Image: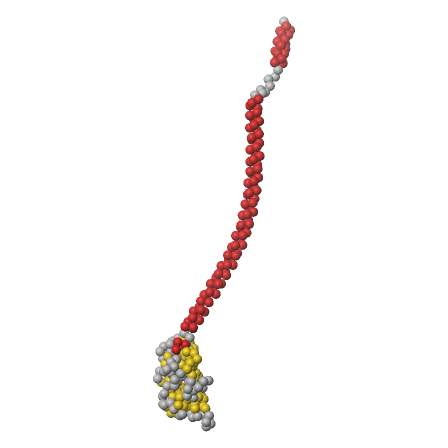
Length: 249
């Protein structure tokens, strides 16, 4: 009985196994043709996009590299420009100092030029027998800035205050001659032009510095003790009177 049951079970199992083998192991279902084509298209598009992105990435990397090179070049140029700017600023500072010095010099020169005072006058004809305290009029001039020396009155008038240098040369005719340099009506120095031999000319010269204020006068006058015969004039000059401003105040 037991044997029969076992045989029956084996028979049933064998039959089921055979049925399963006849049916076969289930396989992966296949996609329809249109879906496969669509999937293939998507894959191709994805590949194309990936390639395009890789190209763009490569291009961007190249651009970044170029930008880095340009940035470094610009940085170097900026450093050079900073150095040049520093040099230019130094030059500008130096030029400003030089310009200031030139302006000061120009101001000094303009001031000096504006205050240039000088005259040089001479006696063109002989003065015969001048009387005592007669103003000696030097009637001709070589130099006479702004007519500071009056050839009609024989008087120099100071246009600016300062120290003036005067020179006087007198040639006497045959006899001794003394003249005075007069400042504002008062004699300040005497020139002696004595002769040492008969029928010869005598000559005397002096140089004199005097402080003057604006409007002060200086002139040459005959002396009150020894004027005889005359003071020799002519051209080339024999008797002359000059003056100029040394320094203004």
